[in-house]
Length: 203
Image (cartoon, rainbow, N blue to C red; front, side):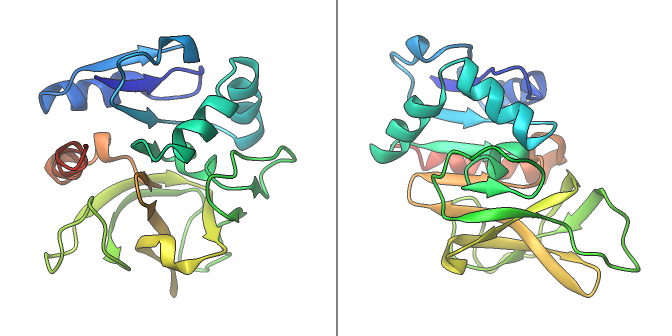
């Protein structure tokens, strides 16, 4: 059973549909008391950092998510769900979950790029990840974001994406914790393949 956390700010239907298509059994969880029997968690997210943290706090998810991570249980963050894993964001004032050290910053001002960064971009592998195939051609994924993570430890960055003359963090990972800034559930066959690899690596 894959628990999809419902705190009122996620594209749950698309995530559930993708997981079901891959043969998983996604269950929407609105409160931590529903965690019994759950093998792995997905933390999706669409919107702004502070309202999302406020919703996680008001629905009682903050400490259970921290405990889940401390117990090294599988957790996949998607889009805003990746940003919430960090300590803080330039988008707001609230503290994040703090599962990864670092902050979330506004995308750099690039003359040839629009903000928000919206559309398809290739993934540039940065370090080994159970989500990505080693040595394969760069898969293209679908992005919609105005902020990006800046981890304190660059070693947790598993993929980057081109942005102007530079690049931004596209995926991070640390043990059982993995997260993507892009939307795999909206990224066609490449996105489904990534989710399938995540499911195959579950204990």
